[in-house]
Length: 114
Length: 132
Image (cartoon, rainbow over all chains, first blue to last red; front, side):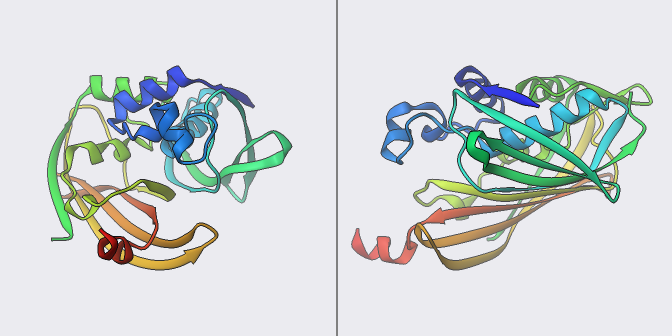
């Protein structure tokens, strides 16, 4: 599943989460930290990974969810979300082109929501 | 002091706003709106966290949520955020300090969710203090 990460979405997430660290919103601050563009919040990526899955599985709710953040995800990038079910858990890899892994995680679900 | 507490009223509006910010479908159990699993991370905005009043930036290293029951709209949650571990490591970016946090949220004394957060600060804090 592919998702274009936009600056507008990051700005909205920053406002809702109140995580307004300059690296997420300010191009100059991102450049000073060594990035060509602003950087998505790790928790935006983790949230989006659950949202994309649950949109396709709306009767499930997540009971445990873990994620490690390996590399920064710059805005205006297409992120690829790949899911694999294994032993009752769902593994998710978030990557960009050339297979650079941004984040990896695992969650478990229960049936019951509507 | 390495822990802070706060009581939070989880409104349906707050859940809806957060769900929209991560493009999450609004889910219900028995007719009640439930919060996306990752929502407790934004509870941090309610805390004044004295041990993070150092120069950043902080990098989010890892995150874990474990639920006993979903967070339901209009719940009153008693939340405690604790700094459970501070570790020094050397990585490819140089000296790293790892701050491991645990957020515990209860409703009427019943555990709802535990969330573990590792924040990483790049640079040697002591060295920078000496150099100021």
